Image (cartoon, rainbow, N blue to C red; front, side, top):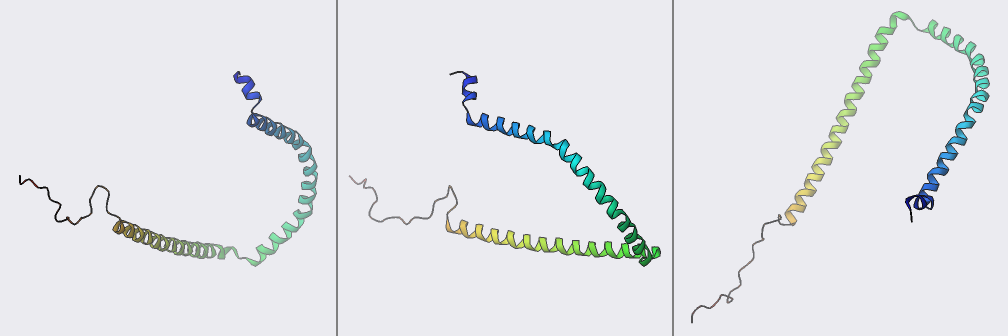
Length: 133
């Protein structure tokens, strides 16, 4: 059997070919979908453009520009504090895991003798060789 005939009869090759065909089919549909959604996007942008302008104007009336640096510092400080707390919690969790694993390893090593060492075996009496002849 030749390599070509083996590949032609291989289900995996058929699967890859089918996947490629499906991908090509779907890629051919993309331009049509883009045209369809382009019109919807334009309508949506026009509808919300006025609402966004109104909301920005309202927000600008509420916020004093001179207060922004202080608010930014407070926000960054808060985020920094929360980050440090989170890192501390992770460190504590990691410490517990390491200690737990170390304890388990210690228990295992106490239960089994180390490789290459012999456990002390009591000597049997009366089994000594007799060389008294």
